[in-house]
Image (cartoon, rainbow, N blue to C red; front, side, top):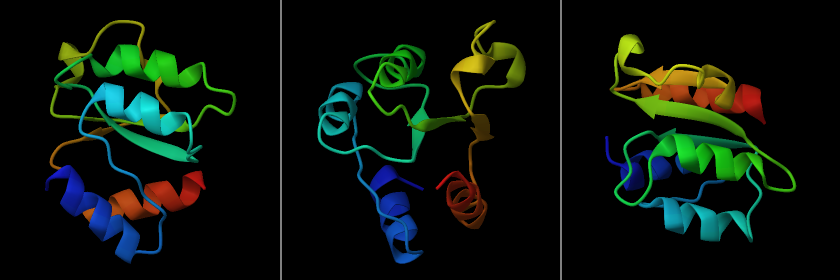
Length: 105
């Protein structure tokens, strides 16, 4: 499921959403929107998700950050589990995402 489609599904489920296709867009959004939770793809075109997570953690009100990734557990960077509230493996079940995000908010 693409990010725009996922955002639409989450909106229809009653969650307020914003969507960013790049880390740069996400950082710009973070200046004006303080989400309770972020679904963050690890593989982004302009910056890796680990660095973006670190930058989002520096926000005045850091969100819960869930890594959304197709990477197997052994492919994850050592010492990064504490950067994320949780890891969600792709393909993610949309209903499970709603449940996770409702717990976050």
